[in-house]
Length: 101
Figure 1 (cartoon, rainbow, N blue to C red):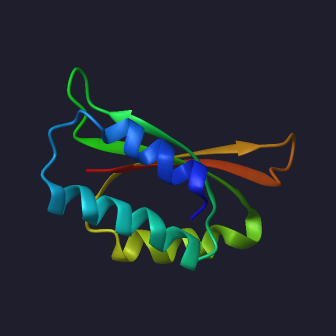
Figure 2 (cartoon, helix red, strand yellow):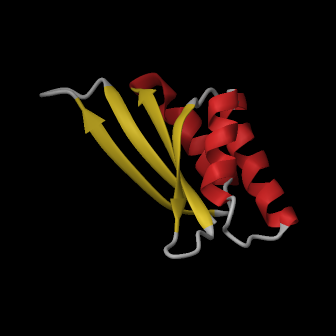
């Protein structure tokens, strides 16, 4: 995971009130995305007014959708996923938002 994503993740959850073990699990899970070939591009807090999770944004090509399925199989903390195809008429890139609590 790149430094910028680490910093975004920490900023997103800085005042969340999550206990340290829960925060550590979320960081570990997002770090695991890189191992599967998924490169997080942005992290947003999830929950207002006090974040209790994050939305992790990832850009994928069609060949990487299998890696996304692998992450979803093991992602017991994933509570939402949004997939937006990019490209007309045939999508070649997918913008994916993965919700983690």
